[in-house]
Image (cartoon, rainbow, N blue to C red; front, side, top):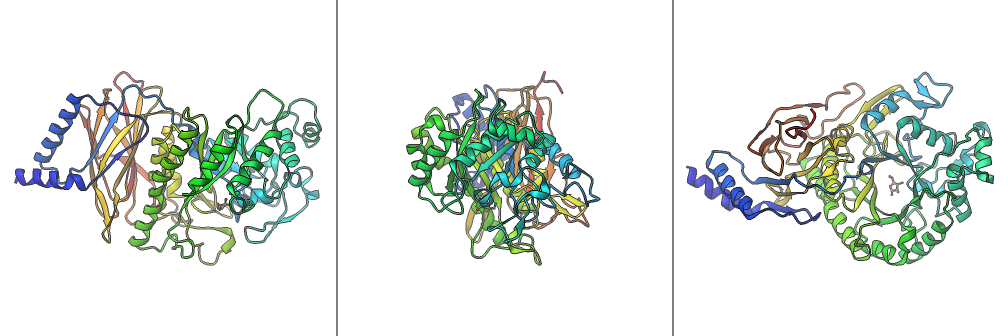
Length: 549
Ligand code: AHR
């Protein structure tokens, strides 16, 4: 019996996915490798039914910081994201608010510790003229939101409203400039208006509108999706335009702006190549990338009523992020081996059909355990590539695509994605612990995906966090984690799971999917064994011996 168990292990082992994360070379002494083989064999003999999920974590000498900005969000003038989501106006509402911004939203997002918020788009950004959104609200001109439902935008939520809201949320603003239909002067003026502290026409105008001190906005996008809704440009043309715009974006202070070039659509590697080649690096701080988890752009599935086939295919597309980030990074490495320029994944998430009866242009969708899986695996990918991925923005914060919050008039609910983002916020600005994974496979219709995804980090107080996702729709995964280089004071954890894959929170039942304490992890002699149920996300906490608890 024991011997056949061992054979089973040896036979099934090569079928597993062996992921070597490309962060840095992990040097494991030969004695440890032998120990790993011996221990793995012992597990094989000890009656465990599943033995192919093995993770090794190198806990000593971590070097790379996981930038908190990987956990950024995105708010576009699209559907009910701004109006009804963030903003309900100062008058005519019974919904508690501060300067028109919903109090319940402020509290929820502060709890999430959102590090930055991108605004005003998206496609909307390249139609937005910021001067329409300043001054007395009653006098602001209206425009038609040509991309999102053709509705009238009254500009009642503008620059002051957004930047003051960011202060309330304790988050950094990321402004997306209009390159597609704007002018160089217009974007240069916006930078001056928000940032210039001395005397200038723009700082004077800002003061006339009630704000003496500047906001000092650091993050600036130079257009959005220039290859598509941002102007249908070719990469070479956009690279030239970027150079022109970036030249005039200056706030006249020594504080450097962080300028982000509109990046590639998923696997358009040529786009990244051209930008890295043609834009002088001293005027480039980030190159963006957009990737949505969509099975088929012409035939998207329902956000809630989906079969396992849809789930599997969605996860296939979500996991493609690993390849995208690796390949875009390796192009960047050739031009920028010192990794000065960040890869900024400023739009990512699941995209399905809109909910029945809602405006197709508003992109309102529910959010299930499938979305929790997308969030968990994507954030693990970003963490593990923290050397190059230093900023990212989930699309979008409220009532649009993969939201963390949904609102219905005075009601507000938190989605499964919110809970994943909250569980993972322990990684923000922590040091990455490099790891290797050998994973069991999740098989559907003869196609396979790695079932287990993971990332790990240590805080500056010596607390290690390991985030684990089991995307298998049917099987619990037993995972053996070898931790090298530190000793721990035990393990605690949290889990997000639910009975069915399409479980979600509703305004009637807002806590159906919720975080619970996790008990199925134990640590002995540096070996952590964990049982992660089907389609669930787990975050473990391991204080080091001597670390403050
Ligand atoms: O997030 C919705 C839209 O998706 C954005 O406006 C655009 O940039 C992308 O195509």
